Amino acid sequence: MRIVITGNQGYIGPMVVKHLKKTLSDLHITGVDTGYFKSGWTGSQASPECLVDKQLFADVRDIDADVLNGADALIQLAAISNDPMGNAYEQVTHDINCVAATRLTKVAKSAGVRSTIIASSCSIYGQGDDSARTENSVTDPLTAYAKSKLNLEHAVQGMASEDFQVTSLRFPTACGISNNLRLDLVLNDFVASAMVNGRIEILSDGSPWRPLIDTQDMARSIEWALTRSSPNEAPFLAINAGCNESNYQIWQLAELVKDFAPNVEIATNPKASPDKRSYKVDFSRYAELAPNHQPKISLSQSIGSIWESLNKVRFADKNFRSSDKMRLNVLKAYRTAGRLDSDLRWVH
Ligand SMILES: NC(=O)c1ccc[n+]([C@@H]2O[C@H](COP(=O)([O-])OP(=O)(O)OC[C@H]3O[C@@H](n4cnc5c(N)ncnc54)[C@H](O)[C@@H]3O)[C@@H](O)[C@H]2O)c1
Image (cartoon, rainbow, N blue to C red; front, side):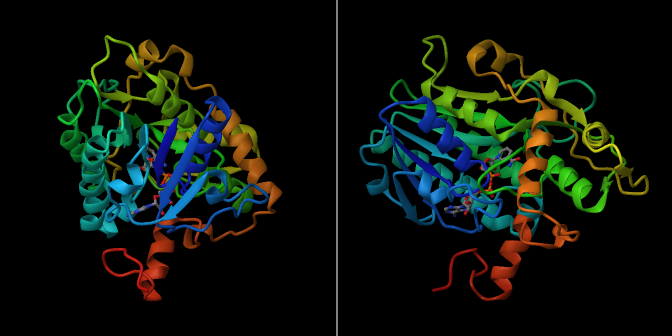
């Protein structure tokens, strides 16, 4: 099988590539990434570009059919990948996450690629109550990032056909280890804070609901999407990819980290304006369709592995929220240095 994967040098990409190499045979993987983020800081793990058979350094807004000719599947991870970046670069977020991914999907179909997988997000459900959202629930994307993901789903839905399967995996918030670990994700941030500051600072009152998934389980989901073939399944499928047990309120995540590191102090911010992004998600459909690819990694295991990974590199940066471990800071630093233009294209 020949696979093209965009965004392979980010946080999730290396875990997907490693997993596919382990589980599928006769695989040739081409990675396409523009290289925004430095990799490999957590130690001796291979850099993401070393894991693929071929690496192209390119922008998904520019690539054409040549890259996709002969490929069986296209996995699309390249994106401006969280709300802070989406808020800072709204138009670019739309252009990369929606416009470029839509165009690439069209190009893939014309090139004879048989399936594409989109890394969508449960954040498209926006503000919910305590009832869990199914794939048929009303969506209410509150941010530029969430809107770009939902708009992409809408744009590619009609392209799916008998010869071209489109799977949109609506993922929970990621956590866990990677060859390119990032700390701007809620659980990763809590573990890093617990380790270096002995304190977890919850930026809200702790009440919002958030489902979580380990990077290794995301990789297993992508493997499922690549190989799904039930005749009863429509060529287009948008599915909540996680498990029902993974819905947590933010304060519960902090308590679980405290279970691991009991001396840690937890501080909430009752005065913070309420975080409207709160969603509990129903993953029953995924349990039904992907019984052999259900999430396996418990939250406690994720916490343990992030801790171990940080410990190995003697992580000690108390001010990591201002560091390059946060995606937005990296983009801002490149902008300030004149390395990226306002469209987040490299200045050569
Ligand atoms: N991390 C999460 O919590 C989470 C949850 C749900 C869905 N997702 C989705 O999964 C995907 C991967 O997430 P991640 O955490 O690895 O993000 P990431 O930011 O760590 O990695 C994204 C990668 O895409 C590349 N990229 C960005 N714009 C590009 C462009 N124009 N051309 C080529 N490459 C480009 C970056 O260089 C980076 O290597 C994203 O689509 C994200 O929206 C992530």
